[in-house]
Length: 149
Image (cartoon, rainbow, N blue to C red):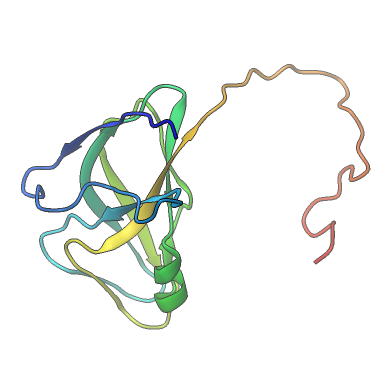
């Protein structure tokens, strides 16, 4: 399997936290960790921006996607507010995650907790060509729910 190299820099004071890594051989996402000094409580219905303590240099032609961790969603109702979050190849700031608590109990985030997944994927650039008509399909203009349950 071919790998691309991504340069990463750690935020000072958080060098003890792991870099993102694949937990299993078949994993597509790498865990991101909370780089916080003090625990953060996320009340039900509220959100918090949680820094990860890393800065990445994603190559042109790729993007980073911040995705929820299924265990946090299933067990606590905690997910990513803007899922998937996008990290553009020219972004050089610290990666942060917007966690929202959709559960019924307060959720505590501690230093080093796994808070999200990072997926690196190729991107495609497009140029829109304005036309007076577009091709017809069987589905046509059928939108939300038009294909059934």
